[in-house]
Length: 264
Image 1 (tube, helix red, strand yellow):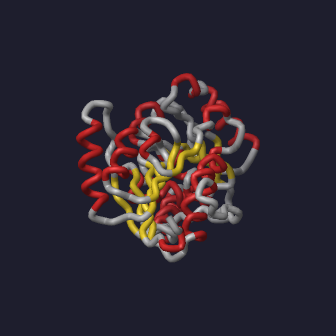
Image 2 (cartoon, rainbow, N blue to C red):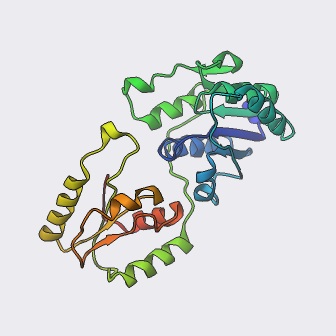
């Protein structure tokens, strides 16, 4: 297919936050290489609000988490939904049988992804070598564009400006006594993988040391599921602030823009 004729692009990444964010340089490079085309993202529902307003994304669709059962029926529904939108190019960043089958059933003429989990349904396949850890994951994601011989030199992170969220975070920090001139350190002590979990008590000790050795404020961050654990941290009053479960993803992004350091 002649890429200069591409007018509608579908980019698919339907799993976790980190993996989706690490695809932003590829999405930005895709927009830069094919500026005439509109880009639609298919993402996890929790990330739809975060990515809304990205300067390189024209449309967002949520794709809910799925189980192994019933994937064929879901693929059929996905194919029907995508077919009416007449995409010229689909890039599937997280390999799943139902996603590969869905874009095939939709009749997308150019289908790019990894050569596993029914990768034979794709027109362009990349070997999935991420588990080897030989390069940064951003570079692996860019291989999905390189297989189409698209340029990927100028890497950008096309997030929204979060202006409203920055204002809200500034107000919140002011209420907590954090002055604009003071340094702020964010600490995220949690992980979904117990094998990667550094003991929370050590995080608490680290934060106490930071407060003793610097004049910075410390903000503990996390989602609603970590609120019970956060109450057991026993942080000293004053410059330590528990924000666990209090921020949306967009507000968290605004908080990071204000932070000097993140420990996670």
